[in-house]
Image (cartoon, rainbow, N blue to C red; front, top):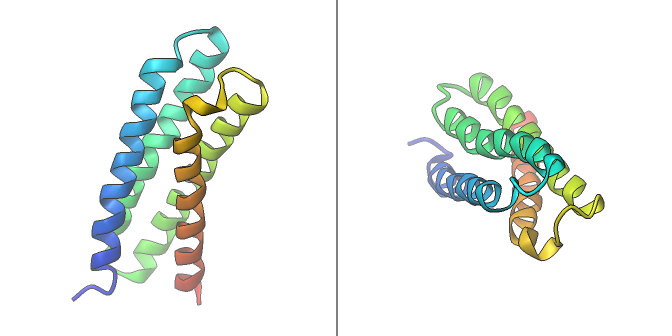
Length: 121
């Protein structure tokens, strides 16, 4: 049995929920101003890419195939984190509208970075 099966199942669902949260955030808030529209599109791309690339990671046939896919997941999660930081620091929206999603991005990046580091060893 695949050593990652429980991990894969848990985080396939969690990253998909994250992507849905980012999508709903975009739909509700990112059409208010030109700045939010531009940043929101980048956020939407990276936030949904986290789930899509994690799914690709789970389909990897070997450690050598999985590792670069997980690296992409880390990069996309970090980019998503960046867009939320930009919205916050530019005061484009009140942090309360996206704190929960930003917190999830923070948690996911820690988890995926730790997994990546374990795989590297």
